[in-house]
Image 1 (cartoon, rainbow, N blue to C red):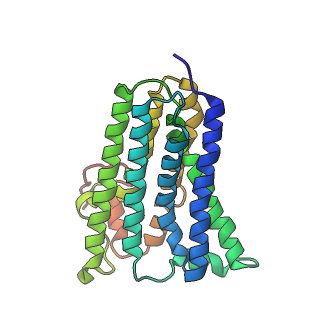
Image 2 (cartoon, rainbow, N blue to C red):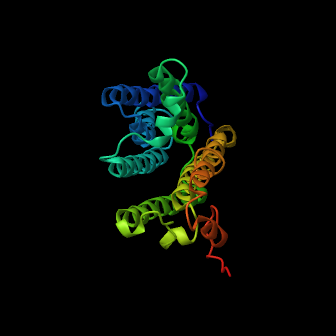
Image 3 (cartoon, rainbow, N blue to C red):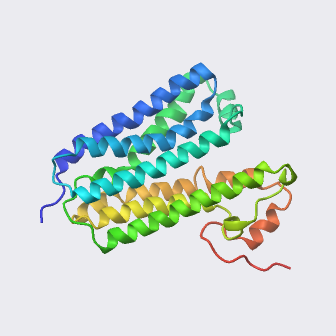
Length: 271
């Protein structure tokens, strides 16, 4: 069985990068007009969907298994569009995100150029890196097997945790009676970050689909993608920063004592 056509993969990676940066630069232009940089969070999911669709389009006629190509494209696009839609609805009617406002207030020189470098181009580069398994899957010749199906199942678990967790949180925060309270119901009673855990499962699931593609060197070359995403979710801009922001909220300390920090576990009994 032949392995990955690396030359074709390289050309496809260039097209994927162009798609990711096109989404981010377009979003940057819109943000300047609207004076609202929080919309870059919507572009995050859209950029992954664009990468998947462009990668699928440019890889046609190569040696990749058609079922794997279509599967990875659909899974990535569904995930990206759901996330973008959720963030768009969540931010509707709100002003600038406090994170971006604080960042730009300290910007040396032009805030616009600083935002372009530190937000839009950086996120574009991360999209290209994290989506490497999606890009590589387009060129793998092996048929779908048990590991790929396990990856699909893990992706489904991830989407469930993300979608259900986001929905539960949206309903909780929409109730004025919950203002200032810590969400500790539903999936949020089992993990303090069901949405981040869901993201974690989605990207490891997509990586497993690559692992079943008939070329171990591709899996070895792309494992950096889910590792980087895991770092961002747990130790980078996800869990760590959010919990730092939540630390002084009443009830949060008790919540952390009884609720798993990341991986879902039954709530612990506390005195």
